[in-house]
Length: 133
Image (cartoon, rainbow, N blue to C red; front, side, top):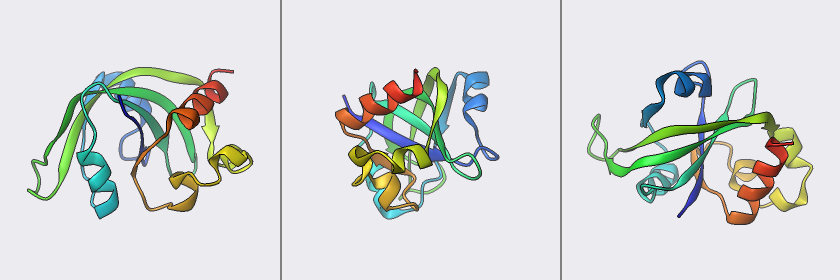
């Protein structure tokens, strides 16, 4: 099972929208590195949903219910289907992660343009722990 972080602008599609919808197709990724990551996503993988914009925080957790497929909008794109698992008890902010040395090499801090990125098991568990306090 893989662990991922998907970034979204809450004005376009927020975690609240996912709560309301239950499932959604994650698409529209254009960055080549992010697309490469998205194509590696498999059914059963877990996803942290991160709000960009003014929030800049991990908000909740989703699960992949359909792995990467060729995108419907363009053959070079890809998309996956995710379902809601749970909202974190509290958002885990980018500022908070910046102060934790365990995240110094995390793509979220090093490559702000990347909208899909892998999360290693240790960082995954640390984020969940912070968000469930």
